[in-house]
Amino acid sequence: MRITGGSARGRKLTSPRSDRIRPTCDRVREALFNIVGQRIVGSRVLDLFAGTGAIGVEALSRGAASVLFVDQSPAAGRLIETNLRACLVQPRAAFLALNLATIPHLHALQAAVAAGRFDLAIMDPPYQKNLAQRVLAMVEEADILAEGGLMVVEEHRSVALPEAVASLALIDHRRYGETGLWFYAPQPAAHQP
Image (cartoon, rainbow, N blue to C red; front, side, top):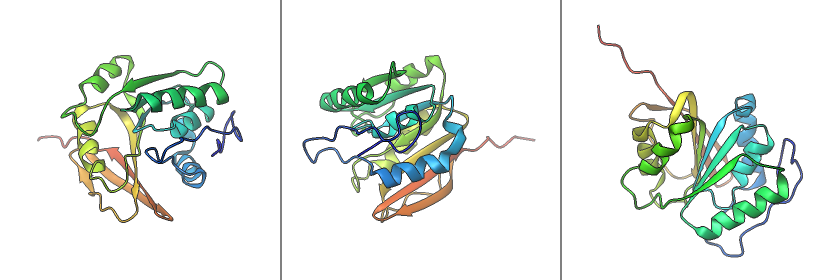
């Protein structure tokens, strides 16, 4: 597993020793960031179900201003720290230990928005555990995406995610082997006459 672009391109990432963490493969990560393109530069990124931190580290390598990594596992936090140190000098990153599968709201993430909303939020939950749609709804309710922001969900390609979740509308969907990527953007509220 390596960084596929930016200042840390080619640097090797430490992989987990157990199968409890499923890192996003290089090919899918590269495709994701090619689609996101230059909007990554200077952006605030939220990496949900961060695992190894590969997505967030890649975002920093490609010019993101900062990344908030969120995962329930302290072991993931240590792995992310190892990967940040191996790939970047003085990364602008923080780790939040939060079990997204059990909390009803994202109050802790709302507190993180004090410094500003996120331009890009990427969610990579365990495949086929019915977490993606529920956490997508929590992210929308927590109002943590900036105007013009983007929410990306990685899930197993066979999962059927909705066309819209409240104000988030599906704008693109791609498949790479067994992996699917869904891209959601906030839609402006309809104006009352």
